Image (tube, rainbow, N blue to C red; front, side, top):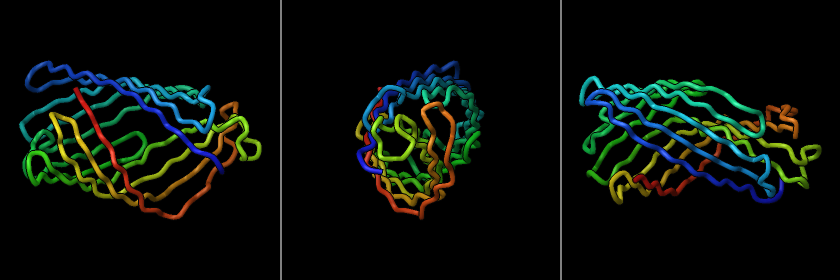
Length: 208
């Protein structure tokens, strides 16, 4: 393939504390991934996290979400997450997620309240990219490219302000698979596998 692939993302979350043990978190996200044209490239997600904290050290979260892609319609999902010392800014903390797609886990150590490092094993997500009307991929003009992989790596984070982070990650991406989907939403070719690769990411996360 030639050309540049682009992604635009927007998200909003709202936290509602019921009492000392129960908390709700509402999530709205929108994303557009495309080569040139943006029409038909959208992805929307609505979700709610239900968190139960039996103690200061442990928390259990059930996430229910509905995801809609222009490429292939809507899908319901559910995840269970177990968190240990999640809100602590000292020493060790960890998370484990049982997902409808891929189990994820992470282990974090805080050197200071602001600076931490995290070892993670995660699903890189599935990106569905709207191909251009004149894409050089034969027969896929106006179709989609689906990209999926898993990652293992290390992330270094610095908290600039309350819940706002500057992070740098270095990771190994593996089990990468590509699939092409035509303009009608039908998967036409799969099992394009790639060798493992090393990647790096610099990100800034801002929460209000």
